[in-house]
Length: 307
Image (cartoon, rainbow, N blue to C red):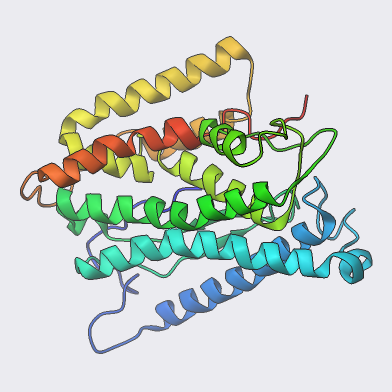
C-alpha cells in the first residue's frame, strides 16, 4: 500500500485534518481513536496469520485461530511484533522527516485484512505535501522506504537462515530476495521455503517497499521522481503505467490490475508543490537516482505462487 496518502487540501476545512495551534478539534480526537482501533485490529489479524501459518484463510470464516493457539501462539506473536516493526519503521521514517521539515502529517493508519496470508495491507499516513519544497518532499518520501528496509532486510535474512525447506511455498521472491537466499541458504531453492515469522515479516516489508517505490502517482517513488525531475516526471510515471498495462495484456497476469486501476483513478501524474524551492543537491540527486533501483530489486510481479 502507498506509504503516504494523497495530500490534503491545504485550505483548512471546518474541522481541520491537522490540529491548529492551541486547540485539538474533536475531528482529530476521532481520527486518533480510529488509528488506535486500526492498529489493534492489525495486531489481531497479523497475530492470527502467524498462528494459522500464513494460509489463504479468512478470519472468522474458515480460520481456526483458537485451535492453533497452544501450538503456534508464539509464532503468531513473533510475526505480529516483527511485521508491525517493519511497517512502523516505514511510517515513522515519513513522519519524522515531515516533522523535521515542519510539514503537517498524521500518525499512521494501519490496514488490517482478514485474509490470513499476511493479515495486513501495510499502512498509510496523510500529509500536506503541497506545502513542501522538492527537497523536503524528497526527504520525506525516501525516509520511509529506507527505514522500512533497515528492518525488513535483516528480518528476511534471519528468517531465511532459520528456514526449513518445504515441497513448495506460496510466496515468491523479488530479485533481491533471490540474491539473499543464494547467499544465506544456497541449499534451499526459491519457492521451497517453509514460512516462518521473520521471513514473512521481511517478505511483507519487501512487498510493501517495492510497491511504494514504483515511480508514479503519489506513491513514494512518485514523490521521488517529482523531486528529481519536477514536471518532467510525468513522462516517467505515464511510461511506467503504460508498461504495466502492456505487461498485464501480454502476459495475462492480472494480479496487479486493481492497483493499476487505482493509480489511474487517483491520478498517475504527481501534483505540483506550492514552492519548488532550490533543486536537489548532488547527495540527494545521487541517492534519488540509486533509489530508482529499489522497485527493480524488491517489486514482485508474482508475489503468490498460485499456479
